[in-house]
Amino acid sequence: MHLERTTLRDPQVGTSLREFVTLRYVEGHANAAPVIRRFRVQAYPTLLVLDSNGAEVATVAPLEAKEFVQELADVRAGKGTLPSLQAAVKAAPQDADAALELGGYLANRYPEQTAAICTQVVTGMKAADPRIAKALFLHGYAESNRNQNEKALALWERVLVEYPKSKAAGDAAIFCTNVLPLLPPARGLAFLEKALMRVDPKYRRSLEYTRGYLYAKAAEAEWLRRGEEAGDEPEVLNNVAWECYLRTWHTDKAVGWARKAVELSQGAPHMLDTLAHLLARQGKLAEAITLEKEALGKLKDDSMRADFEEALAKFKAVQAVRERRTAKASQR
Amino acid sequence: MTRTLMLALLLTATCGAPALAEEAEPLAPFSFDAVNVPLAKVMEQAKAEKKLIFIDFFLKG
Image (cartoon, rainbow over all chains, first blue to last red; front, top):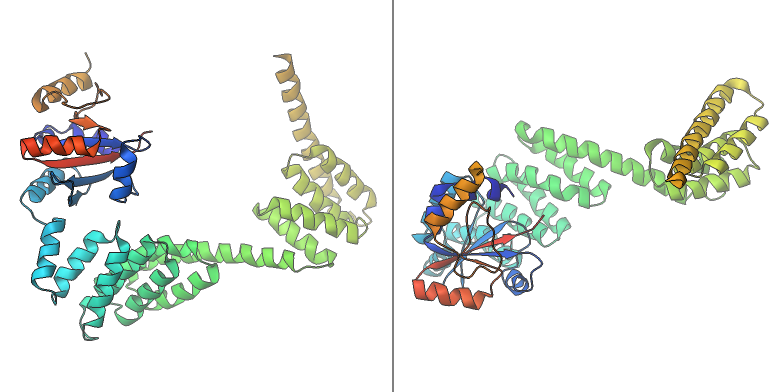
């Protein structure tokens, strides 16, 4: 959309594009599908340049007008194009820089080729060569593009541990934040503990933010596990159900645990209160009100009375609003 | 006439009329030569004009 609103409105861009036959494929159109498949287009917008035989020449980044015009000029001059990168590798197969340039080009749509290139580069290098860091990062990026997130993380971990001062370590610190939420929180946290010890301070903030997110996910997973392993212990079931209520986690499961807690405790008031809250969240207000009344009736200790009365009043108020809405809707 | 329409007309005049357009885009700031046209057909045009093909893969909405 950005391209539509800005870059393509620029007259210089229009002039530059006159040097090409310009074609747009709208995702979902029957004629677009085979081309999208052939060039493995996954993101929009993707801008590709082909030769008149339909072979890929270059990808163009959707940049601001000035850079975009320059990029189109470079493509026409054969700079940074796929054929030029392939020719450079063919001319000097041992040139790691040329190989990594090609690997970088291919990483988004042909990640398996990038992975193979990077593996070869790393294998042929001495451990002290700083380009290993770049190759490892790029390999990890390619793996993440084919959903091999655990592999990606392992490669980025190597970059962060073995080459902490490299630019690649910074790149790994940024890109890992996309992958970490997709893995089990414990795995992500183990990675982050290592990374945070070594990474340049300027990358700490995004890693710390991700660590906070993963701790929250880990806590959720831990409560869920406790609920599933609670067996016939009503207090545990009730505690987990209440925590789920407070944090809006897994309401349906929590209702099941709360019901079981009520049943096992033969209607302990604080457990009836938990179940009532969860049912109210599900919109089952009549049942919630009945249970909260029952909880109040069974209370022997006045310390919770005010809270229960407040909850009951809240459920009744919400129910009244709903009834008014239903009545209005039926009058229409 | 809005400023956008004026610019669109100006750019259409600059860039030439769409040769293979299947769907007209009157208010677009830039007119593509072809929209959703089979690639083989566009390749013929590129060969005839000795040009490269620029493709914008676009997601509507």
